Length: 536
Image (cartoon, rainbow, N blue to C red):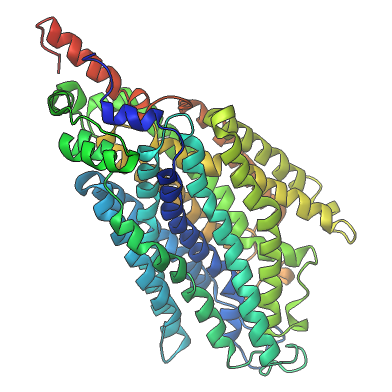
């Protein structure tokens, strides 16, 4: 009996699906709804920002954000997110998941509202304040990654843990969808209320003054779902695994989970003391013991997330340009500012409906059946196939009459990203590392992913430019074109397949089995019964 798992942890592992599971999914999931809404909504409004703040009198085309400004506006939140993932991931292991969880959401609320209130006497001033607040928005969003994943993994039972964590992450799909729908509604209302001619007819009149309110309302709406769940986050009890294995408070862990599970649980203070004081269970993140036990795992989670996000975020950030290239969005001179915004939002919403959202929920349905490894490997492989399917006959897809086929292939790329590595790279780091460094390791893995997003956000704005100087956007130099960019992204997916083999399968196993804490506990008990001392 002595070598068995703590009763409070075993009770969580074998618990049937209960209301508290769904409550945790909603509380954590609404954070990801907000995350996705905020991070992707900016890609919808960049062309509007260019028309409002960078109009050039006499120019044959509408104003666009200069390359450096566009890179900053699109990428600064990712820089903040990367910083927040590292900082709040570490803080979640030091102070506890619950104590830090409310901070991140409050920061997201304040920054979302402040982003919409960005002020300045010049266009440079407005963009500078927007970037400032979006950095702090990203900082708060960054904390949500390791904390939400860790909290959900530590609350879940081992039979359906993958589905629960995936359901939290799947709320991103609804956040992306909401970003498109809110943009369609807001731009539609203003477009009908304040009619304007096309740019070719009246360059100045095509962007009504009220358009300046549109992008602000869209960005500020991101605070609404966060406000709705703030109180619930603040009232959540700390996870039993943190309280028992990290804070070493057996009594509080048993009391908290007795209320959650509605069963009587022993505190097992002596057993908690034995486990947490074992020398084999106290190695740090930068120790040889961690490198030996989990070094390859951390390399696997960081590299696969990095490669996935290079491909995933690159496509999201220039998808509006792909739609223009294949004729889904008319030439910008034939539309006014709000009509262009509405059309971009409609295109992105359609992709979310057909490819993004279903992919997330296929993962929820099958992750505890097929396993993390299989879904991730399949996802990377199919992303490679569809990207090559887009790139090799690219001229065919962009000729009149074939555009719908291009969109279908493009949608399948997103489907297999979400029914694949975009979900599993979020899930696995919350399952395979010890409780005392779980949030930190997830934060490191997620930060590696956001580094990939930064490469996509900054690099592909330039790389995806046409090789024909006559077709290059204003302010940019020639690039390698969309076709060659797709070849590069396919290469990232192939590498993702290879690095997936470093990541262990966690389906159906307890967190302690995956992290090695259960083995360490049993070794300590056995050593104690033999009267021997564990080696350092």
